[in-house]
Image 1 (tube, rainbow, N blue to C red):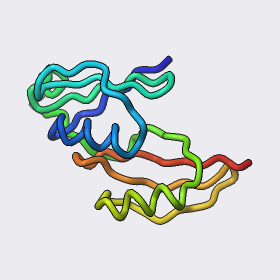
Image 2: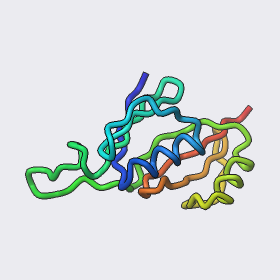
Image 3: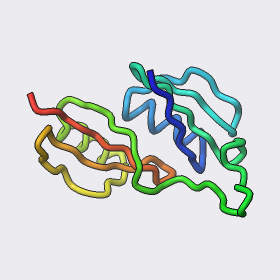
Image 4: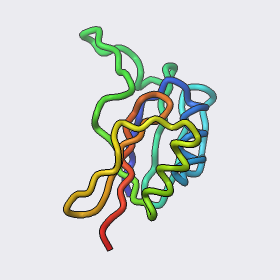
Length: 122
């Protein structure tokens, strides 16, 4: 089992995105500050601006969502899923690309965090 934390701008929007599009289930919510989601063996913490994880560091830097680090969600029928998500207005950073192990595409959650959708080769 793994636990990952993403900083998000809006916990409610993030919950809706991950449960609607990617099959996560809401396990616990702490108002607008934080939520805990689950999908298979992944526990996923969504930390909003009011969460302790968003507090400034000693040097003054403030943790922000976004970047290029990402979680990878294995899916089936990647083209169909990507089409449904695009139709729902989900932004993508690229088109589907083929690699040695399968195909992938990068989408963004409502805060700009990257999620890699990956379909392994059969």
